[in-house]
Image (cartoon, rainbow, N blue to C red; front, side, top):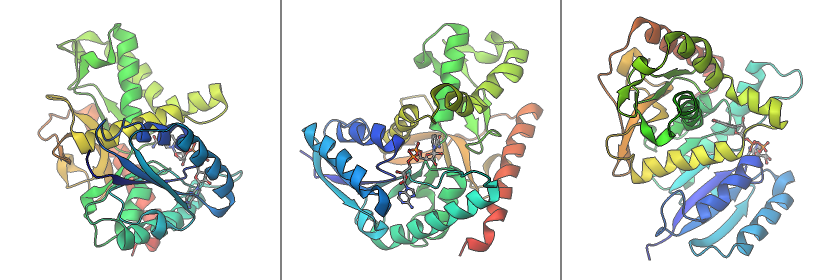
Length: 326
Ligand code: NAI
């Protein structure tokens, strides 16, 4: 049996946490031969419900679960962490402006970035799920100067998976039969799900799908899917978000399937004309515990405009909290 790795999860008593922790402990994130220690962070008011979640984790008697710790101190929860899922965030309250939300979360993610810098392993891989995810990842990254800046990522995998599902429904195939989809940009309504390079059952997607459907139905449906779920369920996506977080970390740690790529929001290196440093969703391939951007895709005018619009939103978010970046 391998030595256990340490996985820290913030917001562990929340909705996503409740779907996420059990799957990590079951080996779905890091594989069936990798024991894990879960290190759970919650605010002081949520420590009691968190104890209930820990009791349930114990009651599953997971063979791979090597231990569980809880804390309301980030340095403690991130101690020697190998993987960190930053799920906890401040939700938008009544009357709260977008800027207030950005600032409230900037405070949380600055402190957590500093704690990561102090306590986590130098090789730690970080995924921001809590919204605004891309900018939260940027803030944590800027507050952790000793860690690898490339290891700060944000989740657009849920958007990617949602787009796969829409395409599969439209064509009448399985999501497994779709390759080469990309979600570009921000995890927000400006994201751009791009089918230009997509193949469905080995055939180019642009030949199978009418342009009007792609532009007028597919793109807005994927962009607005989160809101549609809130409307139907009365609560935001949780199990699908947890599943996407598992997919993101599993692919990063264990690799994307041969010949396939996925979408991850990662620090831009300037590829595709996107400002270097922004945490922007790109097509990536993963292997050996690392990710590489898929380079050299042809970008048409329609795509360029969409990619720029979502980059502009990320620049605005960054500028709104710039005074909080060290
Ligand atoms: P939730 O409100 O059920 O749970 C959030 C938990 O975080 C709460 O238990 C809260 O006590 C905790 N928390 C708040 N501040 C904290 C802090 N400073 N440190 C540690 N824990 C803290 O929310 P849910 O549904 O679990 O969603 C979590 C976040 O994920 C939200 O920001 C949501 O918008 C975001 N999200 C992101 C998605 C994506 O695709 N990137 C998809 C779905 C949700």
